[in-house]
Length: 373
Ligand code: ACO
Image 1 (cartoon, rainbow, N blue to C red):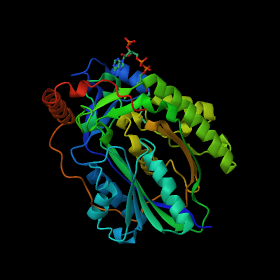
Image 2: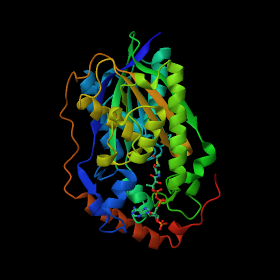
Image 3: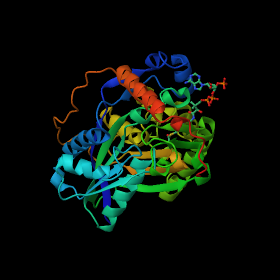
Image 4: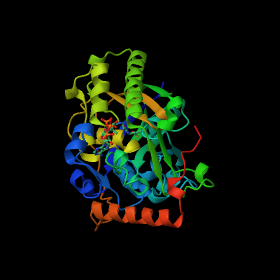
């Protein structure tokens, strides 16, 4: 049966860095609290749209694979922070790339969106529906962040990364996955204002308020990822000792440590980016994958485990067998436009806009907790 090899990879991180010290200029928090509870030291804040970040990441992945946009049959855009809902975001990337022959679809399972997108494209390649796909994980969280809520504002960042998948006769690429959802817990992470259910309920679209039960998320994230990792290893006939590198979702260092120790993999075999980028939701796993390859931590033939969780609470774990090539076939000069504001200046502007919107909508942002579950 046909397999789907990962033949290209590329990331796009916006240049503006928001440090823990920056956050403590307007929040009652400290570098020490954030670093010790989460592992984070800094995160990125984007000056461009999510589609722009995704397009640069996709161009880099295509160049790495030695492919042109016209070679692509499908673009999967994994994200929960779309620039707009209709038209979808994948079509925006298709247009920007000039990938005229490609189908274009969005996948939203929150932080697991890249991995669910990987499963989707992999399945389509294996059935013969398509031969080549670009799968993107991207998130632009900063405009939707409640920057005055220290429980969530310290955790997230913006970024994007993409991979190219191609049909291959070799038994490489995605070996197996375990997908699931702990829907009873969907209320523990909800961003009010990011969806149409709020249109007539006193919440202004785009002006968000976060319902966030950190400890509940923590508990279910660990349990879910440990279960999914055990299940996918079993499906693939592998032991924890067969895993060369874990590339996990990067929400919190303590969550990662709990998951890998229970799975039986030592921390030396874990790729960490959370300290530099924070939780970029759908972008965390592909950015960590790209950096692992760049740092020489993915060797030819390596077996990778990728556990993740996201709002929903969606959970999953994927096992990927790498091919022979760990170097790019080509490069591109694709870049984001220059950023001439600091991350703190951008965040200050977002806070001012939100405060203004709150005044204009009266009690809008302080709407009572909704009863949708
Ligand atoms: N700075 C200083 N103090 C803070 C901050 C902050 N940024 N945030 C919370 N605190 C305070 C709390 O108010 C609380 O104070 P209190 O004891 O006076 O009430 C105290 O610190 C302890 O708070 P806890 O919630 O118990 O802290 P905990 O150790 O659980 O860490 C955290 C909180 C980091 C949010 C943790 O629960 C966590 O990481 N949860 C998972 C979050 C997550 O992964 N989110 C991503 C979900 S999205 C996704 O990836 C799908």
